[in-house]
Image (cartoon, rainbow, N blue to C red; front, top):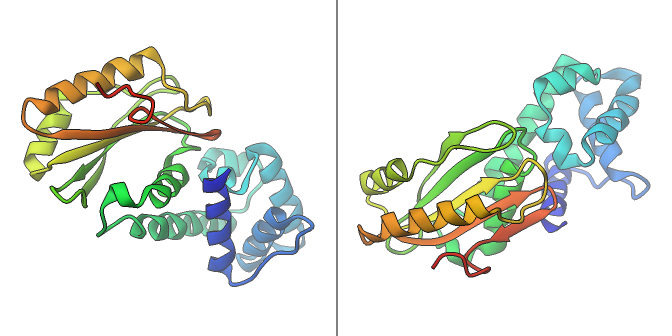
Length: 223
């Protein structure tokens, strides 16, 4: 998956080395844990964490409770948190101060790194100016394992507060499958209609999951 590969490559750059081909994800995590004082068991802890989470990106997105349960030492947990913050910030910088519609791959990589492995559904909005440059990136709601409540009126209000000319809607599917549901499509059309009353365009609604992403705009559901 391209976005996971991008994150993994950022990890390698961050720690200043390229891991051996035999098992690069284990080696990257083990080195990180050793640098945080993890000792001889670092490789075992790294393997256990990857077996549980499925990937390097999943390991970084693991909750504090999961990391503790898997025996990841406190200092290693802090190192993981710092690394996740650094990588996400780096990916976010790649979409700032430039038209979001022209930075498609970079935008998807940032959203995937930040949301695809989240334990609950989150609904966020990217507020854009009249040149489609990002003004604000806000999580509007955070829900249960099944759904994040969406408040159309609040989204339009925030767009007006920011003087936004356009929006990109984003949410994640905790199931891992980014395919849109009927509710996703209906909510999207409701927001498109409400925003349109104020001359605010909705460029896309992107759904991210561990298995990739879906664009409701490309699927023809914005009308």
